[in-house]
Length: 422
Image (cartoon, rainbow, N blue to C red; front, side):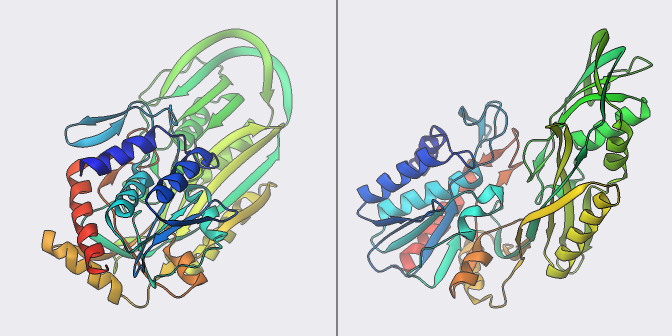
């Protein structure tokens, strides 16, 4: 257990934000070679490492969502949890990577696939060139230790923009900074109805009849927006509330958006969050997150992420959202579409579940409203797949924390599974 925590601590000290993973890639390649593995790397940065005659492959992604002060991560233990000071922790999916490192140390017949840039549209796995040896794949990217995941949502990135009408005038100018927003994972946490900095800013500015001068909100396309910084003219001084710290800049002359109202209308009319709920499976089926809103190159941009566990609904919400923005004369596009993973054969999942039930009789098979790489990998070659992992709370945010006892529980289960497959 302490070795696994130490593995993770090592990882936190190596920068590995999505699209900036070179240092951790080199570390993992060297580590695998030191432990007598055959190692290959494809053009997307996916690392394939194996030794002996493996019958099961472990898989995790090695990039992370960097929030706050990350990649400068200061990990600490508090009340039974691993946390990070003023940053995301990277337990998603660094704990999975740490478990795989330990497996490479401890087992003679083992295969590991470390995938790259999962958090930014599953880029690595979509461009995977490796062929796996084993016909069973165990993904270590889940975030609840009483579930074995056998299906996941598909997703699509959606983009909209329009030309800003910029002018200059003098007025009473204020800076607004978002405070007290929790943020979170745009799939797992969407059911919690977490307030977002973009939606609350839209409401606040509209109610106070503001004219926008600058607007920048959100962090990542797959995160519920937490931060926002806005400069605006107000006819009447706005009052601070639980959501915004307000700084008076004075009566000054500066640029502003003549079409501010269009921005506010688009934000305030947009239906954020859960769209449909599957009562049979007791999970969110379709959702959408308005992730980022910002000015760039004299255009105003929106970035959104739609998810669904139903392929037809995913196509529908993609078209619906594109149409919504197009009706307001925005330029629209979508990218990084990937379908839901629907597991028609649960035999492997039920086998893995049997190990969980020894620890917790209430453990269950589960379909998650988030993206996993199992479906894409199994489309490239025939595989039996499922996903497990320890309790991670508030991933993709500065409140991210991972339960230490849960890491121990998952490591015990995982290593019992691996012993069977030697």
